[in-house]
Length: 446
Image (cartoon, rainbow, N blue to C red; front, side, top):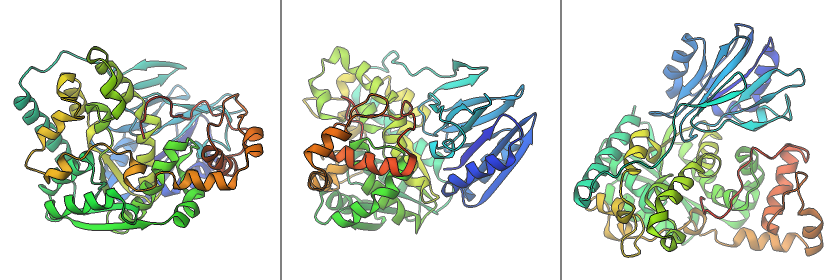
């Protein structure tokens, strides 16, 4: 995904260095220019060229990664007007430098040398003159009806249209975990392409590899696997955490295999599909089955609102680390709007999660894949407690006790998280403000 950066003032050299810190985000083009008293820069991949150049023609830096997924900055009275898409698929951060000038970038690492005042731009917001205003409000709306057959058919149409809107060439693939969400997107994409390329990763014998093979065989994709080892995962941690910009234990753990499969995919394609968002929209997590139906819609809304600095951050950083563009079909604006109208009683039926999505995909996937229960990304890949066990062997109880308190008063929850935090400190320093960083709480959004 492309990257943008800027400083309110004449600062071409500094903005150029900010782009250098994110050079992985765009390997095809680069531009730094001054306009209306501000300096802006952008880097992009070949598939994003038209979108980026269109923004520059409007005296703006920005890009669109599929329908409704965008970030942009426009000069305004010696400052900037910042915009981020409704779910936060496209990342954006901002702050003020020592001179009080506003600055922004697609990744935190590009801002660290400019300012310690770092904030995440909220999804669905526009920032102008130090005030936010909403351009979109994610909310539950009136239900779409009470006929599950009709709802399932309509849902499939929305998903198929969203997939088709992302396909620009045959130079495209998809991450495939063998779960319902990624398999759904792959099955729909295969119907629009001569030969979809699919990519799976996991420990040898991992469930994800088995189910992904079955799905790939069914849709007749060109399938590739990455067999992951414990040593390989440990070795990849510094690079994963540097790109991810997080030490949250569950987020890092789920990012390791995502990062490795993204690397393999980048050897074959410039764009990939990802299945993120299905669990949040269609009630894919086990704990949701214990929530009263009257409260379920609000909980799903909260989960969807939390995607921007958890699972969507993982998708963006994993793909962008290797200069590829990820398309998150479930977060297509029309898909999201329709999903929020579906009665929750069709999302969990007889304790079967994502029931309406399964119904929508009947006949398009192998029965075993269609009925596969939800597995967290790191569980299905076979990672399980391997990293946690490694951390337990590396960090003593005494070290954990003395190091677990963060500079901002927060607490490191486990030795595994402390392992990640040590690497994070090496990458970004100990004194960095962490208020912008998402931390996994009750909701299992990884």
